[in-house]
Length: 211
Image (cartoon, rainbow, N blue to C red):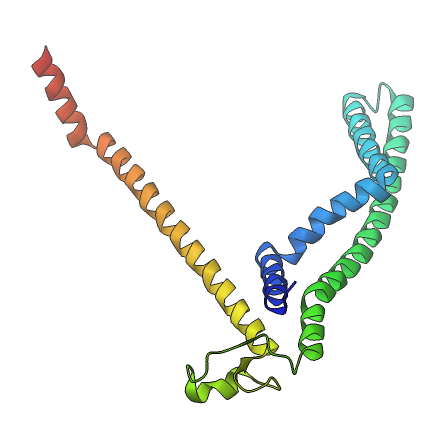
């Protein structure tokens, strides 16, 4: 893969992650992680919640005065279930915290860290060369920091890709928002017009004419 395409794909992945949100991705992959590596714990938590809810419902139907022995037994069972559930939730919370730290570190390495590494390794390389004389005095700036004169450096190309992708995202959002803004008021306006007294009067007149 060429350097120009590799940098573009890397920047695109980083921007997509930024658009989606790290927390959303962490929640999604943590659910998969639980199913694969902690399926028994997750299943135990689900069954324990269902059992507690069932016993609580039965406890509410049991009279503490008329059926005290049964009520006390159910109460102890519910309290024990809640204690077990709290311990299980604490265990899963610790697992989630560890996973989130590792996941965020992995995302940083695959996006920002890898971008820094490519920028440092290819700091003197030319991503591509510009036609001579096209950009005049701007050519040295496009080669910053250490690329050959007349070339576009990795740093400048990364910044250009990031800028272009963000502008593309803004344009797409700008095209989508006005469509929603135009359709909703039109529907509301038609609904208000049809429900207005004048509109109802016109309909009555039309019915009378038909009769």
